[in-house]
Structures are given as structure tokens and as C-alpha cells.
Image (tube, rainbow, N blue to C red; front, side, top):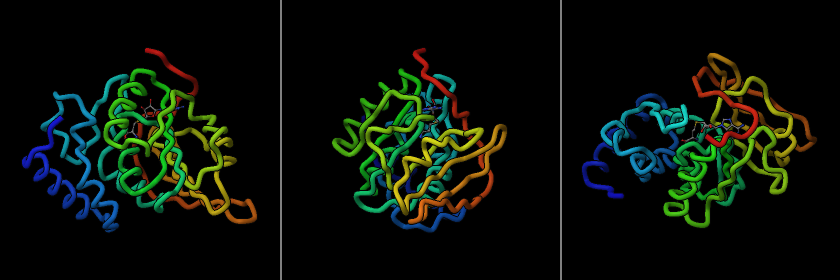
Length: 215
Ligand code: SAH
């Protein structure tokens, strides 16, 4: 694992690309600028790692486009020490971004091969700040609930009730909802337990699938 001047240069360019697309949160931009995205990809994609594109990570899954990672992270509004549940670990890149922002991250993945690979990388990159679980994210992570923030990084056909229930008062759930194309929802749990639901534009994610997969 090497992070060269060339990688750093490409990463600075990526940050400028994302800034031009409308991301203004300096902390989020700094995290994208600091984290070597090529560490989370197969060697074959090293040259493409700093393009603003989703890329394959095996098991028919993708690492999200950096703009999308930044957009979801801004909506999530993590604070230092926020307790965050991520559903869809995938490569582990988004979890590492949340850890860089000071969050205590719990991340769940339904594909065992991806879970193992991401855990190995996250134990190196974000030791102590990210805990990985091989789980069905539809059920959340009840034994660690409630969470200040919940982030779903796969396209859901509906908002899982378990995730709403695992949100603390004042907590925020960011989740893309839809089948072909998804609408990004930001759902805030009010002090009285009710929810405020805001829609934040269209995105395209791999599907949120029920149950575990061992392939
Ligand atoms: N956040 C990831 C993006 C991964 S793509 C990253 O930074 O790389 C979405 C991931 O969600 C896929 O790996 C997919 O296997 C996973 N996923 C889909 N349905 C799931 C479920 N029910 N529980 C947990 N993970 C799920």
C-alpha cells in the first residue's frame, strides 16, 4: 500500500472536481483529500481511483462515486464522537471517511467476501474507530442502538422500520429510496419521536437486498 505524490496530486484534483459540482463543506472535502481511495480498490483500478466515478469492487457491487460519498456525508452532518451506523460497507471507503470526521462507526455488510476484505483494510486504516459486522442491514444493529446517525449506501425499495426505530432523538437517517433510480431522503427524528422527511435529489445505487450472502 503506497500513497505517492502522484496519488496525492490526483486526489487534490478530485477534491476540486467535487467542489465544482457543489460540495462546499470543507471538513468533508478535507477527508476526501486525505483518504487514499486507491487503497480500497483492486490494483487494476488504480488509475481510475481518482476519477469521480463508481467502480466495481467484486460481488457485483460498487464503491460509490466520490461526489455521492461527499453528498451523503454532508447530509449526515456527523459531529466528533457521533455514533454512526452505515448499512453497506462495500469497500469500506465511506466508513473510513466517517471515521476521519471523528465518528464512532458501526458498519454492516451482507456479502461475506466484501465484509472480510473491508474489515482487513479498516483495521489498518481506522484502527479502533470502525467496527465491521457481517449482517443483514435491514435489521440494523439492535444491540448497539440507538445511533445518532444512520447512513444507507444501497438503494432501498422502502425505508426499513428497524432503522427508524434505531435512531436516537435528534438523529438523522440518510437513505436512497427507489428501484431503478433513487431519491435521497434525509429523515430527522424529532424530540417527540416523530420524523421529518426531506427529499434531496436523484441518485443511482446498487440495490439494498434482504438476507445474507456467502458467495
Ligand atoms: N459504502 C460502500 C458502498 C458499497 S455499495 C463503499 O464505500 O464502498 C452498497 C453495499 O451495500 C454493497 O456492498 C452491498 O452488498 C451492500 N448491501 C446491500 N444490501 C445490504 C443489506 N441488506 N445489508 C448489508 N449490506 C447490504
